[in-house]
Each structure stands twice: as structure tokens, then as C-alpha cells.
Amino acid sequence: MKISAVAVLTGLVAFARTVLGATVTASAAAAVPTSTLTQITTNFGSNPTGVGFWTYIPHTVAQTPSLIIAVHYCSGSAQAYYSGTTYAQLSETYGFIVIYPNAPTAGGCWDVASNATLLHNAGGDSLGIASMVRYTQALYNIPQARTFYTGTSSGAMMANVFSGAYPDLISVAVAYAGVPYACFAGPTAWNTQCADGDVIKTPQQWGDLVRSAYPGYTGPRPKMILWHGTADTTLYPPNFYEEIKQWTNVFNLSTTPTTTLVNTPAAPYNETTYGTEVVGYLGAGVGHTPPVHETLDLQYFGIMPW
Ligand SMILES: *[C@@H]1O[C@H](CO)[C@@H](O)[C@H](O)[C@H]1NC(C)=O
Ligand SMILES: *[C@@H]1O[C@H](CO)[C@@H](O)[C@H](O)[C@H]1NC(C)=O
Ligand SMILES: *[C@@H]1O[C@H](CO)[C@@H](O)[C@H](O)[C@H]1NC(C)=O
Image (tube, rainbow, N blue to C red):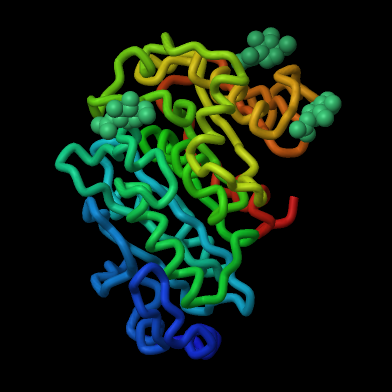
């Protein structure tokens, strides 16, 4: 196991920084092996539902590293998303750190329905993820501007939840086949009405829900990259348009695209942009879910050049 000098140094800088009750120390950085998916079992902060904290630290961490939170689908796992995507491999070239949260429930779905998970610092799975993000940000001195979220299906629903509840932690979120923030809100873990695309609201109503997630927050909010397929029969495509209504309202943008590009990044996807903060990729005939486009993600994250 080789520990990069940079990681140890940034760990020292972060010595004894306190993150929601967890004391982050240099020894914590030194204890994480590199180039292997590793579970962090030390106290990393409030984690009321017991979300698993898995991380991948590349052999050489960049001097000013970025952090990517990569979040799995239902029935998935940290391990499955690690091996099913290329973020970890790419981190060896670009020196960023990856967090792979692992859902605490048997079905492997994220809680995107409870009041606790929907609200800032209120609990639920989202707080466990927030705690591992804060812990890693403190340890490696990574600001919000270099912290990014990507996730598929349930992990994409969590992208919307996390962007609403913790807009202060991330600067770009990519959602591969998700639903709007609070679309699943309610007493049951699975919300058939939302999944079927039958929860339709005005942009103002959707935007108000996001603004209620963290009342009084006035800082920067994450740019949203939203993917969906027109043949999605798990989370039906109206959810794509509802997400666009929601986040364009949050950014005070029109729901009419600023630009539309056909077959972008490739057929069968069309790209629509809304100002600079919201981007949609809708794939004709694509089911659940569009494949992860890691290179494009890293370009949006500013890690790879366009
Ligand atoms: C969740 O919040 C809603 C809206 O404030 C409220 O009506 C509902 O009772 C809450 N649910 C629980 C379980 O606390
Ligand atoms: C929203 O955009 C409109 C039209 O560009 C503008 O008149 C208004 O001041 C903006 N509101 C906020 C809160 O930024
Ligand atoms: C992409 O744009 C083309 C040209 O306007 C259109 O025919 C096609 O239906 C669009 N695809 C999607 C998924 O909206």
C-alpha cells in the first residue's frame, strides 16, 4: 500500500477538523489504502440509517483533487457501481477521489421518500451520504466547487434529493433516469404514481419543494445534468420533463430550451440546454436506464477537457 504525500499533507492540514461530530485526522487519510475499493468504518459523522461508506483513492491524488459521489441503482451496491462504471479507472489518470455509498436496505434502493431524507440535516440516507462527503472534503481539503454527484435510477432519484437537501455540498449533479426532488415523497418507499409519470406539477410548485428542502439557503446550487429514455417503463419519461420544470424554476430559467442539439452526444440522444445550469439528454427508444457516460460527466465536472 502506497500513500501519496499529497494525501498525507492534506490530511495534516485537515488535522482535527470536526465534521458533525467526527474528528478527521491525518491518520485517517493514511489509513485508507489506495487503488482499491475500501470501506470506511471509522466514525465519519451522523449516519442514522447506516449507509455504507466505500471509497476509491487513486494511487496518486491530484494536488487539488475533485470528489465524485457515484450512487448505485436499486438492487445494486457500492461494489456493483464501482465495477460497472469506469470512474475508479479514470481516477488513476485524473487523481480524483470517488465515494460509493452503499444503500442500507436489503433491496438496495435509496430512501428518497421520507421527510428526513428530503430535508437538510434532518436524517435519512441523504444525511449519511452528506456526512461521508463532508468527511472526505475536510480530509482532502475539497470545496463544494470540486465536488460532484452522479447516479443511476434510484441513485438518480437521490441525485435530485441530494441536490435539493444539500445544495451546499456539490456543484454538478448527473441523474441517469431519475425523478424530481420530492416526487417520491410519502409514507411508502416506492411511489407508483411518481414512477408511472403521473405526478405533474407546475415549475413553481416543483421549485417551491426544492426551496423548502433547505430554507434560507442562498448559496450556489448544483448544475443539473438530466438523462432519460423515451422507452423507460420503470420511471416513465414524464419524470424527465418534470425534472426540467423543477430545476429551471430553481434557477429562474424558462422551460423552453436555450439550445437543442440532435444526436448529441450521439444518436439516439438529443441535448437540450436551459441557460448554463440545466441540461437534458433524452434518448429515443432508450429504456431504463441510459448508460453512464463517464467522459461527458468528467467534462461537466471540469476534470477532463471538452
Ligand atoms: C412529512 O411532512 C409532511 C409535510 O410537512 C407532513 O404532512 C407529514 O405528516 C410528515 N410525515 C411524517 C411521517 O412526519
Ligand atoms: C427571473 O427572471 C426574470 C426574467 O429574466 C427576471 O425579470 C426576474 O427578476 C428573475 N427573478 C429572480 C428572482 O432572479
Ligand atoms: C430529436 O430531434 C429530432 C429532430 O427534431 C426528432 O425527430 C427526434 O424525435 C428527437 N428525439 C427525441 C428523443 O426527442
